[in-house]
Image (cartoon, rainbow, N blue to C red; front, side):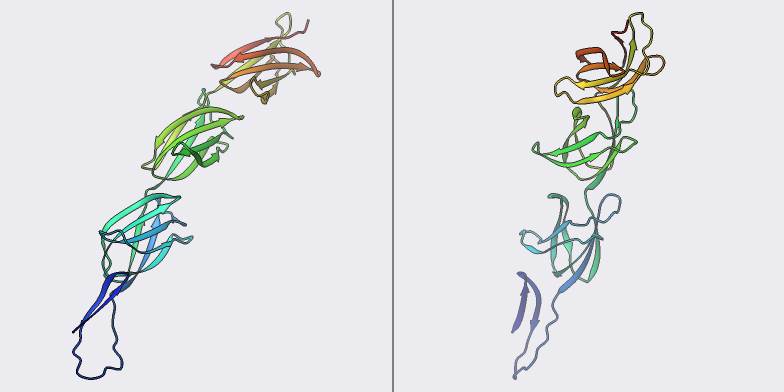
Length: 277
Protein backbone atom coordinates (compact mmCIF):
# COMPACT_ATOMS: atom_id res chain seq x y z
CA UNK A 1 0.00 0.00 0.00
CA UNK A 2 0.97 3.69 -0.19
CA UNK A 3 1.66 5.86 2.80
CA UNK A 4 0.86 9.51 2.07
CA UNK A 5 1.99 12.31 4.39
CA UNK A 6 0.51 15.80 4.32
CA UNK A 7 1.72 18.95 6.01
CA UNK A 8 -0.21 22.21 5.75
CA UNK A 9 -2.55 20.33 3.36
CA UNK A 10 0.37 19.69 0.98
CA UNK A 11 1.52 16.17 0.15
CA UNK A 12 5.15 16.07 1.31
CA UNK A 13 5.78 12.35 0.94
CA UNK A 14 4.18 9.36 -0.80
CA UNK A 15 5.87 6.05 -0.19
CA UNK A 16 4.97 2.54 -1.31
CA UNK A 17 5.19 0.05 1.54
CA UNK A 18 5.17 -3.75 1.40
CA UNK A 19 4.17 -5.09 4.79
CA UNK A 20 5.01 -8.74 5.46
CA UNK A 21 6.07 -8.40 9.08
CA UNK A 22 5.89 -6.03 12.05
CA UNK A 23 7.81 -2.81 11.46
CA UNK A 24 9.21 -1.26 14.62
CA UNK A 25 10.53 1.91 13.03
CA UNK A 26 9.91 3.58 9.71
CA UNK A 27 11.64 6.80 8.71
CA UNK A 28 10.09 9.24 6.27
CA UNK A 29 11.96 12.00 4.47
CA UNK A 30 9.49 14.82 3.85
CA UNK A 31 9.62 17.42 1.11
CA UNK A 32 9.89 20.25 3.61
CA UNK A 33 12.58 22.86 3.07
CA UNK A 34 14.06 25.99 4.57
CA UNK A 35 14.04 29.17 2.52
CA UNK A 36 16.14 32.10 3.72
CA UNK A 37 14.49 35.30 2.51
CA UNK A 38 16.25 38.65 2.26
CA UNK A 39 13.83 41.53 1.62
CA UNK A 40 15.10 44.90 0.34
CA UNK A 41 13.88 48.24 -1.01
CA UNK A 42 14.72 49.98 -4.31
CA UNK A 43 18.21 50.90 -3.06
CA UNK A 44 19.02 47.40 -1.79
CA UNK A 45 18.52 48.51 1.81
CA UNK A 46 17.04 45.91 4.18
CA UNK A 47 13.29 46.22 4.68
CA UNK A 48 12.98 45.43 8.37
CA UNK A 49 9.54 44.94 9.85
CA UNK A 50 8.01 43.77 6.58
CA UNK A 51 5.60 40.84 6.67
CA UNK A 52 5.92 37.97 4.21
CA UNK A 53 3.00 35.65 3.51
CA UNK A 54 3.50 32.43 1.57
CA UNK A 55 0.30 30.99 0.07
CA UNK A 56 -0.42 27.72 -1.60
CA UNK A 57 -0.54 28.51 -5.30
CA UNK A 58 -4.09 28.81 -6.58
CA UNK A 59 -6.17 28.56 -3.42
CA UNK A 60 -4.77 31.38 -1.27
CA UNK A 61 -4.25 29.24 1.83
CA UNK A 62 -1.44 30.67 3.99
CA UNK A 63 1.27 28.07 4.42
CA UNK A 64 3.61 30.21 6.50
CA UNK A 65 4.30 33.86 7.38
CA UNK A 66 6.78 35.94 9.33
CA UNK A 67 8.27 39.38 9.94
CA UNK A 68 11.77 40.35 8.81
CA UNK A 69 14.40 41.31 11.35
CA UNK A 70 16.58 44.42 11.37
CA UNK A 71 18.63 43.03 8.48
CA UNK A 72 15.58 42.33 6.34
CA UNK A 73 16.04 38.59 6.86
CA UNK A 74 13.49 35.86 7.52
CA UNK A 75 13.67 32.06 7.35
CA UNK A 76 10.52 30.02 6.68
CA UNK A 77 9.98 26.26 6.63
CA UNK A 78 7.87 25.42 3.59
CA UNK A 79 6.48 22.32 1.91
CA UNK A 80 7.76 21.39 -1.52
CA UNK A 81 5.12 22.88 -3.77
CA UNK A 82 4.32 25.85 -5.99
CA UNK A 83 3.57 28.94 -3.90
CA UNK A 84 2.53 32.56 -4.11
CA UNK A 85 4.28 35.25 -2.04
CA UNK A 86 3.12 38.67 -0.86
CA UNK A 87 5.02 41.23 1.20
CA UNK A 88 3.39 44.01 3.20
CA UNK A 89 5.17 47.01 4.67
CA UNK A 90 3.42 49.81 6.54
CA UNK A 91 0.14 48.04 5.78
CA UNK A 92 0.71 48.32 2.01
CA UNK A 93 1.35 45.39 -0.33
CA UNK A 94 4.75 46.01 -1.87
CA UNK A 95 5.45 42.67 -3.55
CA UNK A 96 3.62 39.78 -5.19
CA UNK A 97 4.90 36.70 -6.97
CA UNK A 98 3.16 33.54 -8.09
CA UNK A 99 4.44 30.26 -9.46
CA UNK A 100 7.53 30.02 -7.24
CA UNK A 101 8.61 26.40 -6.82
CA UNK A 102 9.92 25.32 -3.42
CA UNK A 103 12.02 22.19 -3.99
CA UNK A 104 15.25 22.70 -2.01
CA UNK A 105 16.84 24.55 0.86
CA UNK A 106 17.69 27.87 -0.72
CA UNK A 107 18.09 31.64 -0.41
CA UNK A 108 15.76 34.12 -2.07
CA UNK A 109 16.10 37.90 -2.34
CA UNK A 110 12.95 39.96 -2.78
CA UNK A 111 13.11 43.53 -4.07
CA UNK A 112 9.96 45.33 -3.02
CA UNK A 113 8.12 48.35 -4.36
CA UNK A 114 9.46 50.63 -1.62
CA UNK A 115 11.02 53.79 -2.97
CA UNK A 116 12.72 57.00 -1.93
CA UNK A 117 11.30 60.45 -2.58
CA UNK A 118 13.36 63.58 -2.01
CA UNK A 119 11.34 66.75 -1.57
CA UNK A 120 13.15 70.07 -2.07
CA UNK A 121 11.18 73.09 -0.90
CA UNK A 122 11.94 76.51 -2.37
CA UNK A 123 10.29 79.94 -2.16
CA UNK A 124 9.18 82.12 -5.05
CA UNK A 125 12.79 83.21 -5.65
CA UNK A 126 13.90 79.54 -5.87
CA UNK A 127 15.80 79.82 -2.58
CA UNK A 128 15.68 76.74 -0.36
CA UNK A 129 13.29 76.83 2.59
CA UNK A 130 14.47 75.17 5.80
CA UNK A 131 12.13 74.08 8.60
CA UNK A 132 9.09 73.60 6.40
CA UNK A 133 6.87 70.79 7.67
CA UNK A 134 5.81 68.18 5.11
CA UNK A 135 2.82 65.90 5.65
CA UNK A 136 1.96 62.96 3.39
CA UNK A 137 -1.64 61.78 3.53
CA UNK A 138 -2.99 58.47 2.25
CA UNK A 139 -6.56 57.57 1.32
CA UNK A 140 -7.64 61.17 1.99
CA UNK A 141 -7.91 60.34 5.67
CA UNK A 142 -4.83 60.43 7.84
CA UNK A 143 -1.30 61.77 7.96
CA UNK A 144 0.91 58.74 7.33
CA UNK A 145 4.36 60.31 7.06
CA UNK A 146 5.84 63.61 8.19
CA UNK A 147 9.21 65.33 8.20
CA UNK A 148 10.88 68.75 8.46
CA UNK A 149 13.22 70.06 5.77
CA UNK A 150 16.87 70.50 6.66
CA UNK A 151 19.06 73.59 6.20
CA UNK A 152 19.10 72.90 2.45
CA UNK A 153 15.32 72.67 2.25
CA UNK A 154 15.37 68.90 1.72
CA UNK A 155 13.41 66.07 3.32
CA UNK A 156 13.72 62.43 2.20
CA UNK A 157 10.99 59.83 2.67
CA UNK A 158 11.03 56.04 2.18
CA UNK A 159 7.57 55.12 0.95
CA UNK A 160 5.58 52.13 -0.27
CA UNK A 161 4.28 52.50 -3.81
CA UNK A 162 0.88 54.19 -3.72
CA UNK A 163 -0.79 57.60 -4.14
CA UNK A 164 -0.23 60.45 -1.70
CA UNK A 165 -1.55 63.91 -0.98
CA UNK A 166 1.15 66.29 0.24
CA UNK A 167 0.71 69.38 2.39
CA UNK A 168 3.57 71.72 3.29
CA UNK A 169 3.42 74.18 6.19
CA UNK A 170 5.73 77.03 7.12
CA UNK A 171 5.19 79.25 10.16
CA UNK A 172 1.94 77.31 10.75
CA UNK A 173 0.63 78.38 7.33
CA UNK A 174 -0.10 75.88 4.55
CA UNK A 175 2.07 77.12 1.69
CA UNK A 176 1.79 74.22 -0.76
CA UNK A 177 -0.31 71.17 -1.59
CA UNK A 178 0.13 68.51 -4.23
CA UNK A 179 -0.79 64.93 -5.16
CA UNK A 180 1.41 62.26 -6.68
CA UNK A 181 1.84 58.52 -7.13
CA UNK A 182 5.08 56.80 -6.18
CA UNK A 183 6.30 54.03 -8.49
CA UNK A 184 10.06 54.75 -8.57
CA UNK A 185 12.74 56.75 -6.75
CA UNK A 186 11.80 60.39 -7.31
CA UNK A 187 13.02 63.92 -6.66
CA UNK A 188 10.42 66.68 -6.35
CA UNK A 189 10.94 70.42 -6.17
CA UNK A 190 8.00 72.12 -4.48
CA UNK A 191 7.67 75.87 -5.01
CA UNK A 192 6.05 77.18 -1.85
CA UNK A 193 3.69 80.10 -1.62
CA UNK A 194 6.40 82.12 0.15
CA UNK A 195 7.69 85.46 -1.08
CA UNK A 196 10.71 87.65 -0.43
CA UNK A 197 9.45 91.06 0.67
CA UNK A 198 11.85 93.94 1.27
CA UNK A 199 10.36 96.38 3.75
CA UNK A 200 11.83 99.89 3.56
CA UNK A 201 11.17 102.14 6.57
CA UNK A 202 11.27 105.89 5.85
CA UNK A 203 10.43 109.02 7.84
CA UNK A 204 8.20 111.93 6.84
CA UNK A 205 10.90 113.22 4.47
CA UNK A 206 11.51 109.78 2.91
CA UNK A 207 14.83 109.39 4.69
CA UNK A 208 15.66 105.80 5.72
CA UNK A 209 14.91 104.74 9.27
CA UNK A 210 17.64 102.31 10.36
CA UNK A 211 17.57 100.03 13.40
CA UNK A 212 13.78 99.92 13.29
CA UNK A 213 12.19 96.59 14.21
CA UNK A 214 9.71 95.32 11.63
CA UNK A 215 7.27 92.65 12.84
CA UNK A 216 4.96 90.68 10.55
CA UNK A 217 1.88 88.99 12.03
CA UNK A 218 -0.56 86.47 10.60
CA UNK A 219 -3.73 88.52 10.10
CA UNK A 220 -5.96 85.55 11.00
CA UNK A 221 -4.18 84.03 13.99
CA UNK A 222 -2.07 86.89 15.34
CA UNK A 223 1.06 84.71 15.32
CA UNK A 224 4.39 86.31 14.51
CA UNK A 225 5.53 85.20 11.06
CA UNK A 226 8.81 87.07 10.86
CA UNK A 227 10.70 89.96 12.41
CA UNK A 228 13.90 91.85 11.65
CA UNK A 229 15.90 95.05 12.09
CA UNK A 230 16.31 97.53 9.25
CA UNK A 231 19.81 98.25 7.93
CA UNK A 232 21.40 101.66 7.25
CA UNK A 233 19.32 102.12 4.13
CA UNK A 234 16.15 101.44 6.13
CA UNK A 235 15.49 98.08 4.47
CA UNK A 236 14.91 94.57 5.74
CA UNK A 237 14.16 91.60 3.48
CA UNK A 238 12.04 88.86 4.99
CA UNK A 239 10.23 85.75 3.90
CA UNK A 240 6.46 86.04 4.15
CA UNK A 241 3.82 83.47 3.11
CA UNK A 242 1.21 84.48 0.58
CA UNK A 243 -1.52 85.48 3.02
CA UNK A 244 -2.92 88.65 4.57
CA UNK A 245 -0.56 90.01 7.21
CA UNK A 246 -0.41 92.84 9.73
CA UNK A 247 2.76 94.96 9.70
CA UNK A 248 4.19 96.86 12.66
CA UNK A 249 7.41 98.83 13.03
CA UNK A 250 9.04 100.06 16.23
CA UNK A 251 12.01 102.20 17.16
CA UNK A 252 13.27 102.48 20.73
CA UNK A 253 10.20 100.52 21.79
CA UNK A 254 7.79 103.05 20.31
CA UNK A 255 5.36 102.13 17.54
CA UNK A 256 6.05 104.12 14.36
CA UNK A 257 4.07 102.16 11.77
CA UNK A 258 1.09 99.84 11.58
CA UNK A 259 -0.85 98.33 8.70
CA UNK A 260 -3.54 95.68 8.74
CA UNK A 261 -4.72 93.05 6.24
CA UNK A 262 -1.89 93.53 3.75
CA UNK A 263 -2.05 90.76 1.14
CA UNK A 264 1.30 89.27 0.12
CA UNK A 265 1.19 87.93 -3.44
CA UNK A 266 4.56 88.75 -5.04
CA UNK A 267 8.23 89.47 -4.39
CA UNK A 268 8.21 93.24 -3.87
CA UNK A 269 9.77 96.22 -2.14
CA UNK A 270 7.25 97.71 0.25
CA UNK A 271 7.73 101.19 1.71
CA UNK A 272 6.68 101.78 5.31
CA UNK A 273 5.99 105.48 5.80
CA UNK A 274 6.71 105.76 9.50
CA UNK A 275 5.42 108.30 11.99
CA UNK A 276 8.78 110.02 12.38
CA UNK A 277 8.82 113.73 11.68
